[in-house]
Amino acid sequence: MNRPLSQLIYARIQDMPSSPRIVTLHKHNQYAADVKDYAFAASPNARIIGLESYKGVFVGKEIVGYTWFIGPQQAPSPIFFGDALAEIERFLWDEIDRQETPSAELPFLIGVEQGAIMALAAAAAVPDLISGVIAVDASLPVVPGWEPPLAPLANLPVLLIEDPARPAHESVLTGERLADTFTAWGADVTRATVQDASNTVPAEIMSRWMSAREPRILQVDSID
Image (cartoon, rainbow, N blue to C red; front, side, top):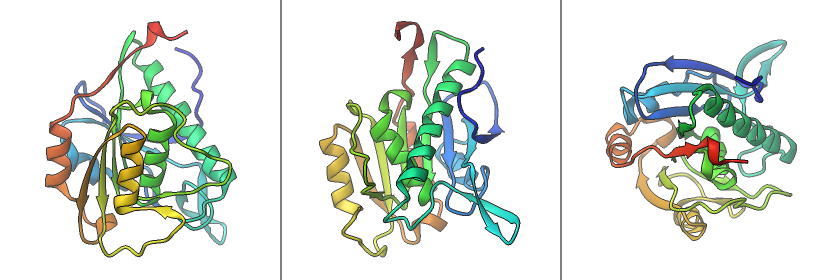
């Protein structure tokens, strides 16, 4: 095994020899395991990893949680957004490497709120490293200097779980605009609406969607 590429902290919430693999991405001011209920709802017998950002949220000198980027959701700092996305990509390669097989199973990403933004960004940047995305309280901001998609999405499954009461912002893709954008990029998009999406676990929606999809396999030995 090679030295890990990513410096992100992660928690192996449920590490069993089963499929699918799920990687969760937390909300602003949370820890790696704080959105594990979404993963269990989607697939209770999955291998579940809680991924944690590297940027702490401080109260005084104490870290009370972590954030994927600095700035409001509609206008992330390009530097922190880019660094977080690069670290997620490195972590995905690390997980492929850790499987120690030429036929690695690719994980599904489940992100909530700020984590949903990063999960969708990963789908637009490295769709060939994941099996699909569930984005809860989903949106995608316009980040200066970043022009997705960076690779063809090739029918990547994407489930957008939206809060119909969430206020719209013209610089953020949400709702129908978000779905249409990812469809135009080549994703296989499903939409669902849930009141108070970032605090409600829509178990039936996620479980039904996940059970209808097979994990993707990456043939590592075919990559130069």
